Length: 320
Image 1 (cartoon, rainbow, N blue to C red):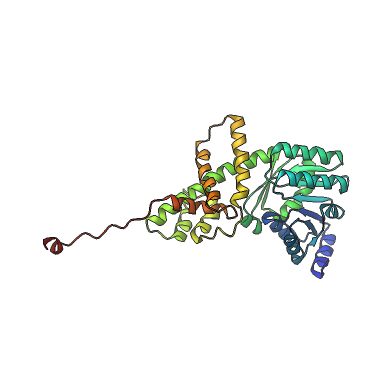
Image 2: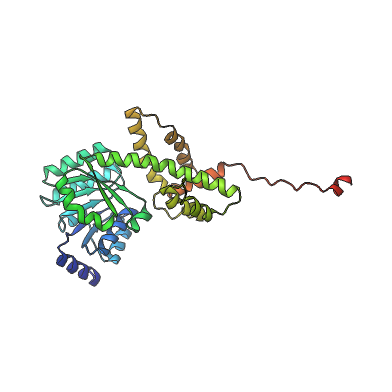
């Protein structure tokens, strides 16, 4: 442990704050770990990508070589994982190496049945699992502008409250286990639509000759504003979607979960359905690793080329 990490550990011990294990140090996980460190928590983390673990160490956290090694140091864990297989692997290691009485907050956007299975596996080992997906992008995670949709054991949620406050601006207790994911799917349906509507509006405005940054500034403060306009509008204006805070490739997973839920509930969703071809096109055009703001590029490529009208001939030239 480096000197910075030691000082953080002593500060956390004096404050009585729990030691937190962060499993998954990607865009979201690394931002949350950094904010927890800034808030004075001691953080142990693991990610199979060694570069991510090295980044945690530079920030003052302690990078461990395995999930089991993190489990040996912590009683509280937050999981930020990309897939169901990753969840199954991590939960298996926590069940094998974690302490009874530990609590785990699963923050990923994953199918509810997979989370239910994970909860059962950990419960058998005496560990509580909470379903706590997040509302916010990677950029919002950096600025601690996240909302936690916390669901599951109420006592465990109360225990986690100081940790949530360390990396999020708000925590909403939305009910029994799985309600967090349900709320997340509703929120992401709106995100899917508002992201496309932002791109449409931005393209219309720029085609009329309006400045892209002025569009974002003015529209965000009006009746047509949305959080996606505020967050993704600047990315579209700067064409900086190569700096992803939510990759199109990852977003496809979220879209599939929403579509499955809509189908199961027989809910008509014409606006959401209309967004699907645009996100698919973003993948086809090579934007899989780019931010979802790249849908602007899709619409721009689909749009007809701008044609400039020739100036009307003067009366003198017509007489000639």
